[in-house]
Length: 126
Ligand SMILES: [Zn+2]
Image (cartoon, rainbow, N blue to C red; front, side, top):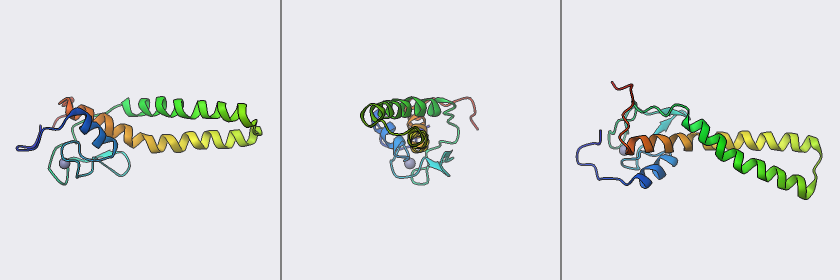
């Protein structure tokens, strides 16, 4: 459901715009509001996004990416510096939570943009 007269956007561009939290169609309006809520329509171009459902893909992407960053870093720090256990138990979970909170809206934006670019309308259309 692309707006009439809107330029064609490549899938890669759309996903990059989604990662940045921007409208995949125009790159101007916001895709998410209040952290993870999907906007019904882009404020800039009017493209509809309220019907897209990302479901569990963004949390899974977040877990996979954060796990592949945090676990190797913790193992490298453990081998290199052998910090005390209380420090590891403080920094590790804090880093994992902070990274997950930072990645989750970006992953959701990427999934929504991918769904939009593939014209995956979903089952919850208005
Ligand atoms: Zn837009």
